[in-house]
Length: 168
Length: 285
Image 1 (cartoon, helix red, strand yellow):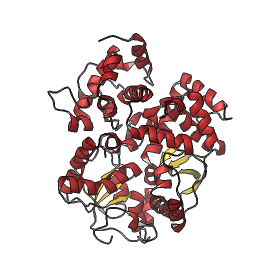
Image 2: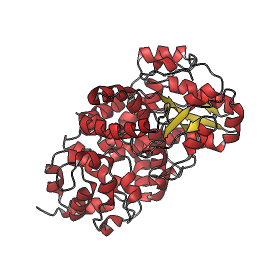
Image 3: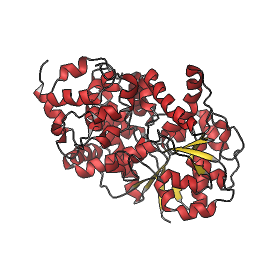
């Protein structure tokens, strides 16, 4: 296990309001309240989704440990934000997990729907592109057509930010 | 009342537009005015944000710029969109480095984020107009037992959603009660629908959905009312898979809160396309 100090610094910087993550005392309220831990993890095992373990490894800078595990350890998170609310230290866990997911996506290890959605947004500016059958249904329901977004503007943003390069 | 920019979002606009139809009918009755704008994907707080947070911020900020240009607040029909747009606004307002970085990108497409407008979830707007909602009810739904699922992103993170109690939400219940229906409480009310994890790990998503649906079935709810299209799809389309997987008949109809309101306000099931639901209505409401 190697401590990656650059990675550790990045983790510290991810907090929107401060570096509260360093005050984590591993109480496990996050894991105890996590709906995915509840269905994927037994108390005495180390497999399954475990937000507490993620925070510990991120805080210590164990980059290789985090990214060499089964991707479930990162992508099991269902983004319900429950852990953020129950944390007694007000750590914004979901922001840290977002950072881990971003890194994992860059390495090509995200679940397929993450890439297909990003691709749809790059190509059409919508996560779900418009289709003729739905356009007809909108008409039948008396709805106006969806206003066409400016696809070029989104492509410029995604190219310049470097998100396009992460697409599969 | 002031006019809002309508943010119907990708799922409602391009997949389940019958929810937009019901919402527009209810807005008309209550007097909520809206107009369109060429918004892109919000983008998805469980998808694009996990893919690239910086792109999530920039695309979200671009949408906010479109509403800022007209000086109008946004009304969102979806938890995810409201969460993204409020979250982007919160992060850029509280982190000047981030704001400068994003504005540098936006400048290349001729835009600048100022933070001059507000983003409202439609449930909050209805709650603010509860008297008008009540006054518009012409066919009270007396006797109907309703379980509610406000969904995670409607109230969490509390720091930027500022809508309801984060673990004991009540706004959706109050709106349901305005229709004359009876709200039935259940143990797992704040449990996530599991939409995001089901996309990646179906086995865990279905196990979570079972806990949720068992809790709802236990209290004998006639319908489940939601205010998020991702939750709607999770319950409406995956309930059948759940019944098959666990050999148990769930079949609890799922209604968007604006569908329930539209029915209570005298709109017919045909006008709002209720036939497009996967889980059939057991009885005529």
